[in-house]
Length: 243
Image 1: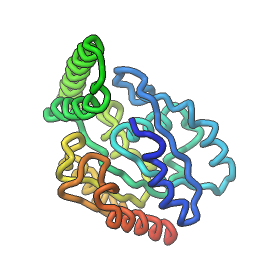
Image 2: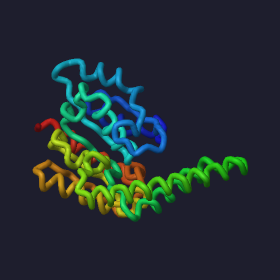
Image 3: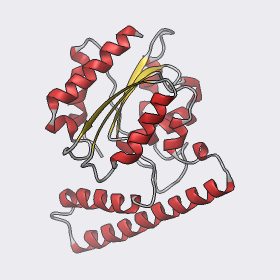
């Protein structure tokens, strides 16, 4: 989970451009495949209501990884009256969105092992055993999700009711302006389905800007390439002004 000081450096780019920012990290609500209830977004609702109180208030979203994608789905489905997507003019996608497939269990193991390096350095043996049990359980859950996704495809069921990737890809209220920042080196959210997503958006007439890097890690693109990342955000802001 991201810490606020990590998010603050991104907010500063927008604040220097004269925009107000609202930072939010949504807690994981447990192993659930529900698009509506996969994240606890209650902590940001009052702030969002205040931001959107003026009738002419508009949003620009900057989303990090799949946690943010699930958060956006939860916001839209739990609080439809806020009309978050309908009042959004543009979205920056950092390291997302991805479609979970046969390669995803290994990606989750990579993510878990990355977290473990920091969290388990001084952990007790009991905590280490608990972590490995959780990792096995989570990996199994991902495999079940992928299997269910395949069955739904065979049965002709709409995947936009099941996966966050398809929910957003097929949503009629996605804004016209989109920016994608991702890397070929990202082993947690690999680039293949991110590329497929933004290509589909371009084919649907969206205005798409892409910064595809070769050697930065998951959500570490700004850290390694601050000038290029900042330039991408500035292009996004300039395009917003022209809408």
